[in-house]
Image (cartoon, rainbow, N blue to C red; front, side, top):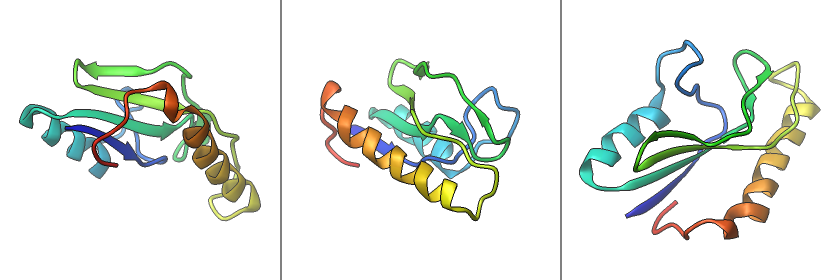
Length: 104
């Protein structure tokens, strides 16, 4: 199956943090024969820094796709709400460019 994971805040490989649930789920799905695309925020929730805008291909069946958002200084703020809103909107506006998922 073609699976899209919509999870903005997890650490991605290369950021120096241990994998969280989204990464571990993807790593379990790929060997089972699934194609996984993880839509992650372009803003790193932990370090409060922006990530690369380029897709990160972990394996032929696992891609991490950064979604353009704004940043925020505080986890509890209007700016964070705005960033989450932008994340959702950008997925909505760009999803048609990719093969439709079987499940999200």
